[in-house]
Amino acid sequence: MSLPAKLRKANQSASYDAFVITRGLEGCLFVFAADEWGRIEEKLKNLSFTQNDTRLFMRMLLSQATDATLDAQGRIAIPRNLLDQAQLAKEKEVLVVGNLNRIEIWNTGVWDNYLKNSSKTYEQVAESILL
Image (tube, rainbow, N blue to C red; front, side, top):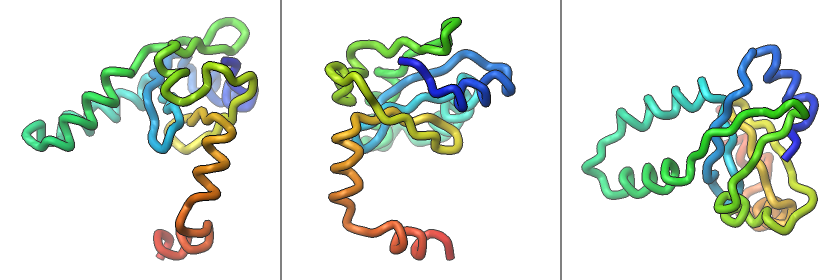
């Protein structure tokens, strides 16, 4: 998959070309720069492994995490299991969303359904979190 030029330029200025791709939430994939992934790992290390939900989440997230690097054309290879997980294997076009510390890759139909079936509007969410 080719990363958008804007994201490639931001990546070059930060001087990293290594990423970790893994299962995201709500049906997307997460792509983290390697240094940001290191921060995620540190947070995970501080969670209690005696909690069932923690173990399950970590297993699901980490078992599908894979390293990736940009090639000369600004592309990253996404493993088949992750393409299948995010319903991207048969898609020619995907939605790439920059999201502060990560990139999210979405099947456009899954994205549209996610937004359409949300129980709250953008304004309601903004009001509840931006107090």
